[in-house]
Structure formats: C-alpha cells, structure tokens
Length: 283
Figure 1 (cartoon, helix red, strand yellow):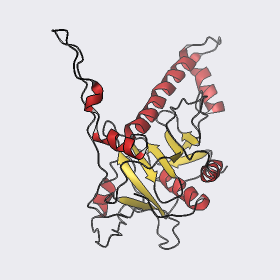
Figure 2 (cartoon, helix red, strand yellow):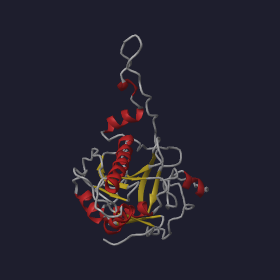
Figure 3 (cartoon, helix red, strand yellow):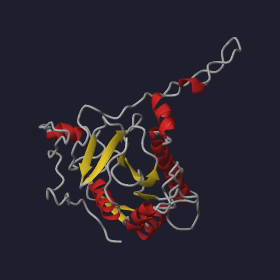
Figure 4 (cartoon, one colour):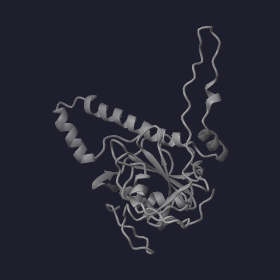
C-alpha cells in the first residue's frame, strides 16, 4: 500500500482543506469561534476540518470512575462489594451491549505497556556478541518496530462483516501524523478481529465492527471530517481519546494518543467513505 500524508478535506461539497477554524453547527446555529471548537477536540487531535452534526448543547455523557472500595475492616466485617459502585457509563454500556469506553482505552493502554516490555526484552534480553546499541539500531532500521503488538480483544459483533473486511483490506501500511510516518504494526496472536495499529511507543489503534458506543446520544456533538461523522470521546483518566465513526453500516473506533496529528483521522475518514456507504446515525 502507498504512503499517506495529512491530506486536505476531500469532501467534494466544500473543497476545503482541513482547517481548525472551519466549523459550522449543522443544527442551525453558527459557531463563530473556530479555535474553541479545535480545543474541544481535547488536545489529542488538532487541525481537522470538523462540523458539529448534533449541536453544541450535547456532549457525550461521561461518568466518574468509581473509587476503590475497602472490603475489609478492623472489625473483620466485609465491606461493600465493588460492584455496588459501578459507574453510570458502565450501566449505559450494559444497556446497549457496547463495551465501556474505559475498556477500549484500557486495551490501548495495555498495548503500550506490553510493547514497552517487549522492547526492553529485545534490547537487554539477548546476547548476540555485538554492541547492544548498534545491534538494536540495525534491527530497528531493518524491521521497524520490534516485535508484534499485543492488543486486548473487546466485543466486536460486526467484525466479520463485508464492510469491515473491505475496510481492513484498504488500510495503509503507514499513516502520517504531524509529519511523522507511523508504520503499521504486526499484532500478537491471538489478534483481535478487524483491528489494525500503527506506531511504536503509543500506537494508533483502529477497530471495526464494535457495538454502538453508549456515549452516542441524540444530543451528542458530532464532527464531520472529510465527509464522515465522528463522535469524539476523550479519556477521563489520560491524554488519549477515541473517535467513533457513526454514519456507516458498522461502527469504527480510532484510539489516538495525545499529540497525534490530523493525518490518521483524515486518512481513515477517506477509507471509510470509499469502502462503506453513508447511513444516518442510530441513537
């Protein structure tokens, strides 16, 4: 597949390039503060051409992570069960059948931790009789990121659909982010279905065929990027965020770390538009 770069907005209706200041509210009220809408992207992705598709009044409901419960006391009586303090977001996820947002982000975070462990083993856990620094650099130059990337599986009932199959066949070997080329990673077995990842230290992870995200509501603020509507869900516990494609036959989730440029979002938008027909978001 060919290298991709931060591409301009290819929406034939506007012909404009991605511009953080080009924002309109499709619910009828003009948004004259382009920079504020860029800041609403939670700092994780900047510069994408966005359109609020459901109005600025409704952001995704977010629930606080429950505090740990002490289940033992000095008197020996058992404390309250942790399940009793489940968050409202987890309850909503159960109602819709979709995995909680925390699970998707935690899965990406675990991948980062495991990748770091694999990298450490690769650097210090073998004796080749050569200079460790020089050997590691030679391996990196020859093969890119070292070792398969472990990812946690999450429910994806539509992962074997034709739409996901076409999407995964079309994804590129590299994504461009802020001028940096992110190499596609090999996934460790057992690999989650309909999943791809790019980058080494903090990978960008694409998943296809997920259940409807519980944060998607009629009042949710949607952003249009290259003709595709996205729901932006920041991570409450960290700097990463997950973006959901919500106007295609299947749901896509793109988890991006802090500092990721607009390139991955634009490229995945283009591929979603090319491989899947547009549908109305379901709430």
